[in-house]
Length: 143
Image (tube, rainbow, N blue to C red; front, side, top):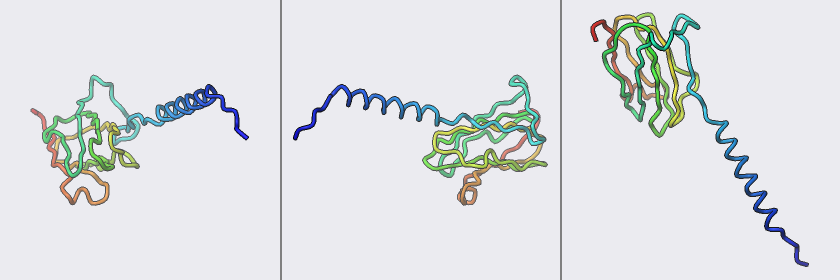
């Protein structure tokens, strides 16, 4: 016995599945995570922040090595093929961007009040720091 197929029903069902999946994909895009200052929930107005773009790829961090002191916003982008995270250690500071590493293509934002001194920024995922994924950073007036 042959079943009767209605091609319009299959087209409608296919379109419904496509729209459903595209909606799920749009909802699953993660916005950058915004973390406060090292003192807690304090944040600063945009006009007071020194904005620093950071790009992370396998075993490299592209970031300026000299920065001025003061409230700073790091916009960290994982441009690599693997998950990465951003950490900074320095005078009275030890911070990690996020509990979960950034997936490839994902961004995160960290706001921090940088004091003059020597810092190290690195990727705390696996042994990436030991594999060279770190940068020495100096914060000083007159940059």
